[in-house]
Image (cartoon, rainbow, N blue to C red; front, side, top):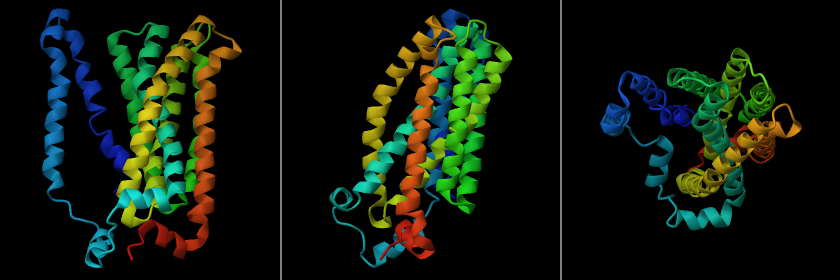
Length: 294
């Protein structure tokens, strides 16, 4: 459950920082430029220090302790990852691309995009973003809970279908000649909820690599994929958003919606691959893949 809740911990400061910036309109522009912009970063740093302190009370997992006692740890784990776990690397890269789309598009970029279309005030933009953050964080807890008790591949498939439908509905309501604020906001909360699909990324990566090389496999695949997708996704999102604003109520205005569908198909493909290679091998084989130490 700790691993499945990792994205929730990753976003622990995200709702706090936009919330702290909601007080910025009370400051004059000169004060904001002079010192007020530092407030959320200082508060975020305090919470990071607290998390570092709490890390002292964590203990190694029983699986790692067993591997250390039996000297089963890999001497060159990255080399072993490349030689023996290429499927895990490829799958992790694909699902990481999905994670990037969920977070970058809908949490980081979309509030600004929607603000420009609907002419939101700074207050309204902040609350719009916070609504999405609450939805996606709540969804990540739910998806982690369900994945503890159900087949994660099935959970991923259900979330991916909802993500595709909500994504198309959201962008169809946004890129129109007369968008309705209430409809756009409702679709945004819905698509952010199903963007909790990103939580299946660490779940799949934790299950696809053997314990002896799990950390190296995850870090290798994730960092490479996130670097590539993090460079492509914002540029693509800006281009499709600009086209949608300039050409409302056209087939091309749904470009971002079609990209969400592609991400959903990538997630479904990853779920099918995990079902065949990991979860479909039976409880005994699955436990070997997930937590084998010897």
